[in-house]
Length: 239
Image (cartoon, rainbow, N blue to C red; front, side, top):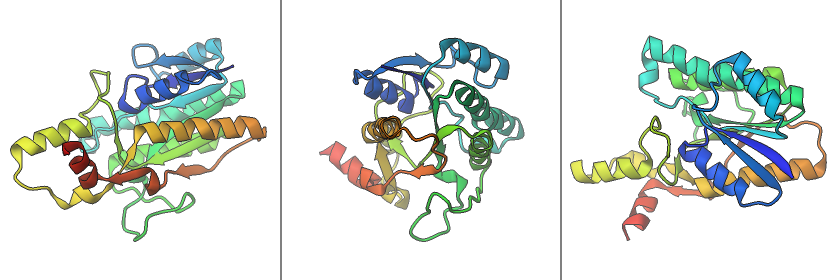
């Protein structure tokens, strides 16, 4: 049985990761949130995770208040959580010989390329949030070891348990339905099901273990086939 540590376990993504891994008898799940560990404290990260010694570490914690990150003080916080902290986690994972999964974002790109991006395309973030997430990718890659970097676009799923989590897609749609008379064009963008994404994460880790590969160092992209348009999703929920 593999021991998997999920950090950010009360967020929308993290809680689904806990559910998916806990449902599989091959994994023992340890779920930590900000009350259990401060991932911006390098010494604490090293002490607590080395003592636990998990075989798999998944980082679903993030600063994701995109607009607020444009403020100087908030950008500094975003760089600590999204940028430096993933590097601290990667260092501990490498020392333990553990698999490390880190979630990033499509905000590392400028969105100007028709048809989307491949894993090895050059990032060019436009926002401070995107810059902070790119820094995290760079820190993880710099450390090396056995890691996945998973770039996601948008997710939908159950409401987050964490009090500090931002509003979910459901909550935003309910508010818009009450205050707006029409939907804007951004409703056409793709959203990825949390259930499908977390299942994909578990299956890729299983493949890595089963194949006995020594390292995985390329970012992964999540196919649009795993998602649906926001408008289609809203209409389905409405019906």
